[in-house]
Amino acid sequence: MRDRLALSMRASHLLALLFVAAALALAAAGSAIGDTFYLRLATEALIFAGLALSVDLLLGYSGMLSLGQALYFGIGAYVSALTLLKVPSFWLAMAAAFAATLVAAIIGGLIANRVRGVYFALITFGLAQVVAKIVYNTRELGASDGIIGIPVISIGIGPVSVSAGNPVGFFLVVLAIIMGLYKLAAYILDTPFGRMLTALKANEKRVPFLGYSVWRTRMACYVLAGLIAGLSGALYPMLRGFVSPELMYFAVSGNAVISVMLGGMGTLVGAIYGSVLLVVLKSIIGSWTEHHLIVIGVLFMICVMFMPKGLIGVVRLRIEGWLAREPSVPSPAPKRRRLAAPAVQPGRPAP
Image 1 (cartoon, rainbow, N blue to C red):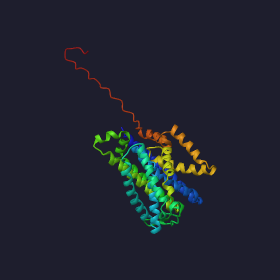
Image 2 (image 1 turned 30 degrees about the vertical axis):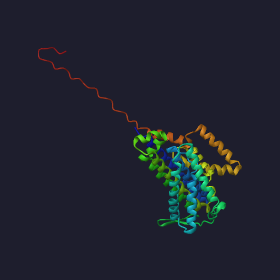
Image 3 (image 1 turned 90 degrees about the vertical axis):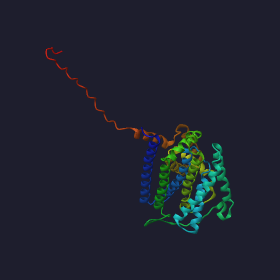
Image 4 (image 1 turned 45 degrees about the horizontal axis):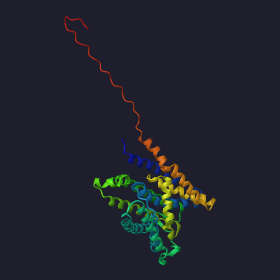
């Protein structure tokens, strides 16, 4: 009998490969027709997909709802922007964002992991609001205007150099980073640590009887999710050339939660699909009417009511069923045992 979690991850990997294939086809089509707008829009969707991925890691696998995950997304974006203004180096900006987000996630985790349930959600929301207000009132960080004028950098990848101003090249770089973060999260979830996360979501009170620390497991998951969000946020100023305090607002965290619910909570790859779907819907519906949030809200309620597993969750169940099938090999018919004829003793007639 196959492990259910292993089957789920295999199905998610197949959907991830399908997503990469579709993204590469989009990049090829955009390069052929010289498109810029939709490639930039797709790149932004991928960046916010990293934020949704961190939310799904918390909510879908450990049962922790964070309403302030945009805090680490914004910290990564601001640290990356400040680094690029001083030294226009892609790898230095990513390293600085990683270090700053790590410190912030540890501090935030020490505060938020003291409580459970709705109180955890409210504390994460409050942390993001406090930091956003501090950034909003700090003149050295641009205050309400944010930081503008971030230079276009060149990304050195071995002997190849890709400019952030090249729509196709930067799209492929962001795609590689986001899928790398997905692969990292999937690898961790396939370890005993990942089994502990699912155990926490199922019944947190029984985990200590197995000899494991609930607090340490939750803390490690929180920090990992913060790092994924921070590294994704570090890519935003390279794309848009500016950052603002709005990146830490509740709307950004709320959009990430909506993306997870649309794609499928606990599917990991569903967060990526959901984020792309949400950004595309906002762009298309926003071009028709200024009340696009009403339409998106109605679609979200329909998805929650009639497809609680999300779009990708429904598809993944079918793929799991296909993977669980064993090849039907007809078993050989049992051989009938022939009974030996009894020996005939001399002087007696045969029976």
